[in-house]
Image (tube, rainbow, N blue to C red; front, side, top):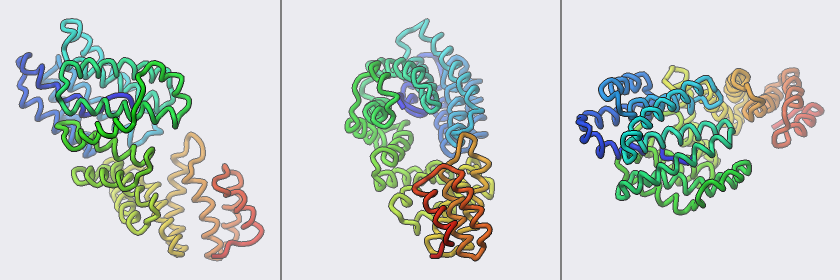
Length: 382
């Protein structure tokens, strides 16, 4: 949350590659192709592309860095699965080691500064997701220092604003949302979310390499923090134009319509996600199928088509029972309760009672216990 991300460091390649007798044009072409493969969820293709980068430019940290970014996106698509964490940390450590070797010889090498800063920032970002706040803060502090140092080396490049935009925005917003972070903010300059939004917007329209990543951040922060569905939807639509089979982009696009209670549009998107998952599209895993089947079921429920609603809620419930390793998700609690109501509608009273009783064993969510107790006494009728 406190660093530039996957594309933002690329602009500095041109400053150093020529000086090291690299073929800048080929390197740039390979890296851009590989990055597009990552966003397009073509991870095997991206692995092969960056293997070429590593083999042809072994002394440069770019290949190792972007191989780590493939692992990062595997984590993003299955965020509760920690099986990739150790590999990711090891890959980032390789990037840091390669960068340090370059900096030991030339402490003004902007490539090494940027890639090391990126590695530190991503390590801190995962540590924050895993709620290891102190270690995350230390990584963020060191990474941010390298961002400023790199900016001083080349202040005219638009892409550098991605790092500042992310920092300025989240440094104000994150402590407000997550109070546990506040004690660590003494390490950092003050945030300014409005400034951050302007910087990210500039990169999103004018960036050379960081354009897609800036749009990704604008999509997510407008959804999660600003609660501006029109803005979030605008960026999601632009991202999907280039990467129509990225489930993360597609999910956010659909959720903007859910937030606006526009199921007519939302269900089109979630049906597409569900169908892609059922056909084995890369990245469309059980997490996305669970969410998609839930919202399809909700659409049928709102239309009072009980049997079709129950069919998709049962799918979502099944995925939740497989996925909920760290406690009961809202998807599980809601589907168990809603299925009780739907079974009542279909005259399946015994099944309805079983679901209401299970609802009482799960965490209370939005009055689910109160309503389940009521429907145990009197069957639900629409």
